[in-house]
Amino acid sequence: MANPHRISIANDFSAFPAGRFRRDGVFNGERFRDEILIPNLRKFGKLIINLDGVAGLPSSFLEEVFGGMVRRHLASFRDLQSTITLETSEPDMKVYIPIAWSYAREAERNAT
Image (cartoon, rainbow, N blue to C red; front, side, top):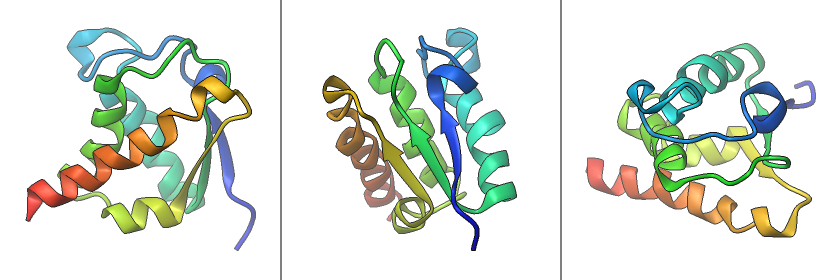
């Protein structure tokens, strides 16, 4: 398989992602999941999501993206971890990686 496709949240979406649903603002988790993440997963199979350059990643945004993938039966926790790599070169952003995966894991636990 070819190298994973790269997505930069800051460059390809917004440096200020926030909110869970579309009604919460333009750069919300629902929109990122539905308009960026899912189409790119379908097209490329594997993704690297770069977190550099964002002002922060609110829990509502992360939960809707990663927990929402599981809740909407679009992927299991294991599938997400095998197809998506989260990366950052910014020390302050590293904390968001395990948080994002914890939302997917929790959504899977709550679904059973």
